[in-house]
Length: 148
Image (cartoon, rainbow, N blue to C red; front, side, top):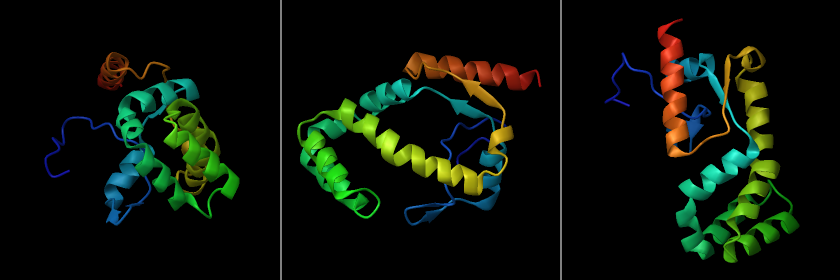
């Protein structure tokens, strides 16, 4: 973050104050929470994850093992299915269920608790999370912000 150009916009994923053992500075959290929200379909997210995390399919045993860290957050049967899918490299079905049963519920709780203005947040919708689609979306947001 020390290398950010403070006159240029920075695109970030919404995060909590703490990421593993790191703490996000309060001023950055405030800016994130006041920023434009980008919304996309579940299908577009799955396609994005399949591209961006394709390397996990090559580390199927490690991916299956990491599912164990969700013990206590998910039912034993659910984790067993996820581990089986990881080992079988069935990433599409695995990522779809992770989104539906784990990430969406966690993000929703976090947004409701931490992003109190989330329902009023300005939104930008897209279903194209390809590299070109993200670049086009960023250019559109920058163009819109220049006219605001």
